[in-house]
Structure formats: C-alpha cells, structure tokens
Length: 504
Image (cartoon, rainbow, N blue to C red; front, side, top):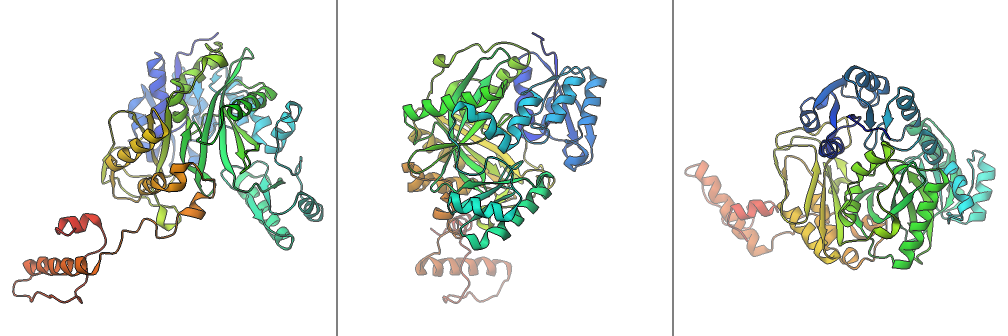
C-alpha cells in the first residue's frame, strides 16, 4: 500500500473543486492545473498550488498530458486524479502516468482499453451471460452486408460508433431505403469525433429508460455495486436530470442488474469507481450498453443515498487499500435528484448561452447540495462544456426530493444568461415525471417548443398594463398624452415586469 501525499487534479471547474475538497479532508496536499481562460477559477484558488498549462483551448492545455506530467515532476506530485472528461478515459495517458512512477486514480489502462471500445466491451462480457441488445458483435463497414444484418435484426435500428459516446456517431434508421445514407453519416461523424470510423448495428429499443449501476472495485478482487441511477431525462443523448434510486426498479430487478454490473467489472478486472450503463425497455428487459471507466458527472446522487464519498473511495483504492465494506453492508437511504444547471437556452434547442453571471446566488437549506465552480460576476468560458453547476437534493422519499428540488430551483438566482433551471421546474412538475412513467424520449414527447413561455395576459390585464406603461412613459416625457386604448403595446409577458408595474 502506497500513501498518496500530493495529488494533482487534471481537470477544471466543479469536478476539480470537488476532488480537491475530498483530498484536503484526507490530509493530502493538492495541485491544480489551469488554462489561461481559467486563471481566476475557484479550483485554482482552492488548491495548495496551481500551474498554468497553456492557452484556453483544451487541446493546448487540459489535454496536454506531457505538460501535466512535467508539472508533476517539478512539484513532487505522486498521484493524478483525472476527474471526468478530458484525459479521464485515455488509456495511453494512464499508462504514461504509471510509467512515470505515479499513481493514476482510476482503473488500469488495460481495463480502459477493453471497455473504451463498445464492441470489445460486448465481447468481454459474453462469458458472463450479460444481456446484450441484438445486433452485430463486431465492427462493420461493408454497406450491403450491414444492410442485410439490419434487415435480419429488424427496423428500426441504430448505427453506432464503436469508439463513441454522448450520441456522436449514432444514427437512427427507420427503413431500408435510408440505411446507406445514414451509415455513411455515422461513419463520417465517428471519424470526425473520435478518429475512428468503426461502427456497429443494434436493434433500436422502444420506450427505453437509461439505467446505470455504480460499481466500485479494489486491487484485491473485491467488487460491489452501489445501486442504480435513473438518467432518462436527456437532450441530444446527454443527461440533464438524474435520480437515485430509479422509480421503476423492483428489488429483484435491482439485484439482478447489480449482479450483472459487477460481472461486467469483473470481466476486465476493474479497480476503482466505474459505471455500467443499461437500457431498460418497456417490458422491463434490460440490456448492457457500455461501461464508463471513470467517475460520472452524476455521482453525487449515489453519494447521497449511500453516505459514501466516492472520490475518497477512489483514492483509497488507488493507494492499494481493500474496500472496507461488502455488498450486504450497503443499503439505500432516501431519494436523491440532480439537475445539471447548464448555460443553455431550453427554448432554443438547448443551445449554449455564454455570458456573465450577473447574479449568482446558490440555494441553501436542508438536503441541498451545489457542486459548482463559479461565483457572481464570472464569465462562462466559450471553450468548455457549458455546465455551471450540479444542483443536488436528498429527501426521505421521492416525493420529498421532488418538492425539495423545486424549492431549491426557486431559490437559485442566476441572471445574465439562460439556464436549464426553468426546464428543471417544468420536468419535475410534469405528470409523466411525477408518476415515474417516462423514458428517454421525454423532451420529444412532453416538452413543446413554447413550454417555458409565460402565459399571455388576458384582455383586462393587458389594458391595465398598457395604461400603466404609458403612465411611466409620461414621467419621462412631460406633456405627453396618456393613451388609454387597447392599441397601446402591452407589457411583455415577464412576471418580473408585471410585478414591477403592479400588474397581477
């Protein structure tokens, strides 16, 4: 066992700050890295030491493994935590870290290689009788052969990039006549995004729910699961709202999916924190999708229901310590929800809305946690993911967690940019979400383009607003005539503006 004394966090923003905090509680000295765009970021100020590793672009800074290792040598660092994203699932970087005599807080490069490719992952788990979505077991590039296989599997089908993630290189095909075009588009996108055009075919699962299982393994062969997370509220195949536990899993189904997740981890001799992702269809059949060999964005909901600090567990495993608990020691306590607060405009297809946090006030109170990396007055950089924060709540029941999240969203004050806060309110109030009867198509099925538009005022309210607006104008222009007809423009549908004018 090797005790970590000095840890470098090879990341930025909220996850860097979150890792730094756990390390500090463990008495470990910390080092942050930053790009020129993040010079004043919170994680930079929090760490014991911080070093600039390059210009704003990720390829020139956070993805420069050579510069990061150079910082480690100069500052006497003995371990690196990669967070998520950037180099967290880069097997070659993990290998270079170990070759440099440092500890990589994560799985082995070999496990990353196996699970980093969806096809090799499927091949690795076959010996454990893990349910797989019908489709090809290897990469395919020949269009006629691929079309024949698609017909055998049965439309609709998905064409997916083998090295993909986040929905990139994935195409839904409904009929044979569109297959060739969609396959070529998937290959082109896979090459552009991952430098690898390998694709495969899967049956498209109808009414799917995205259920993932958190696993934790040590270097002594012990592996446990920490129950599931429901991640079905997504936009562009990327998660926005997560919860734990899922509202749809029975104890029996939970135990079976947990067993399969542990077997997936065992298939690659996994050590560290990882996530096994499954699709659950409308008949409660589940299928293995992939394994993410890193800490997930949504790990806080698992921490809330288990009482564990996953970052501390990662560090202990990396030091060579055995897991201090067995599967039977773990239980679910209460219910947790997480809303990813993005600088995005939900009414404009969730496009990024970069700007300055003119107002930024976090919610507080019982059962509320905010993982973020920003303060009021800071800019949201254009170079990185537009996530501002993760708003996490915990309650005794799902109903209490939903009520607590709605209260926290109302308390969260952000101006200067559009965010997903209002979208969160919409989802948590929607009957489909409240009842638990939803799937990954929630936005398509339940979120119309004008869902967040304020209601138009009735005629009487519009007339009063028009008069009051005209009166305000006369204060600026003495002698002006007050218009009293309905032709005067009404106050815009903002509740804030109506309240300011005394209109209800």
